[in-house]
Image 1 (cartoon, rainbow, N blue to C red):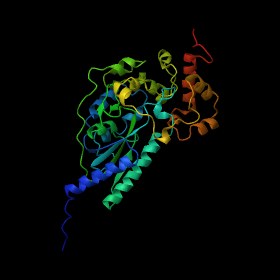
Image 2: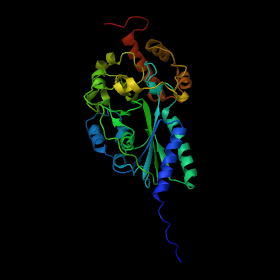
Image 3: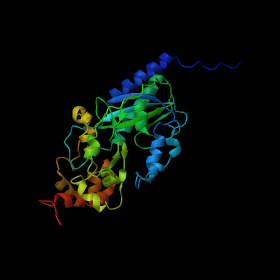
Image 4: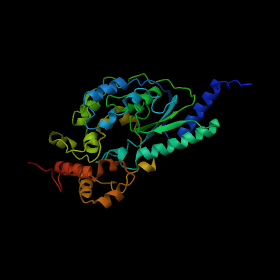
Length: 330
């Protein structure tokens, strides 16, 4: 006699597992947690159009996995839901020559470690293995799209996800799972209103329209992703920014009101960066050799630019702020 299939888990089980998943997320230090059902990505067409417009510059890797990116079920077949989390990295910390997100340890490692532990706890709660995988900017997954669907916020005009209690200084991660969870209500409201402070403040006019970023003009792209020389016409606008840029977030009223000090030890500035102004940091970078670079930036997201890229950035910054005094003038 063939046994009948086990009945589907009752809704209460899914609700309880959802409650436990979010409780684990907060216990592990995440600041936001929500659930989204996987399926067609609502922003995939806009993302494809952004790529077609050339706004990604030399970031050719973004075009890979296009089919998977259009449907969030495809990166890991069989998965049905995502637990989407956010981790604040301290937008209230003082501005400086390095963007706040990059001053400490690599957020990919920090977030993935916590998401893997969350996955393990959820499996213990369910009493079985749950197929799943964490994503933190590492796969063909539009995490910002999932975050909005999970109720975590709306797309700001600076293209960042904005949350009405946190602002935008946070990392996003998603744990995609083959398990039934209760989805949250998507965040439908646009709370930017008529504000254009982020667009107006961008030194290079990289925000070419509300929610449209031309990365080829963005200081973060120019100082991190671009491997060639920084275009001469954009160098002066970089000012004293050695790595990354927070300007469009700094001026956002939601961040002015709700940004928090950093409370994650992993994101505290490392010794090589801490307390240095643009001139001091640029000069110290130019004094590095390969061995000292590897030691200073072990486990840092700033390794992405490599020593050559940081040296290029440092030279541009020193041309702007001056080596030991007044800015250089022609």
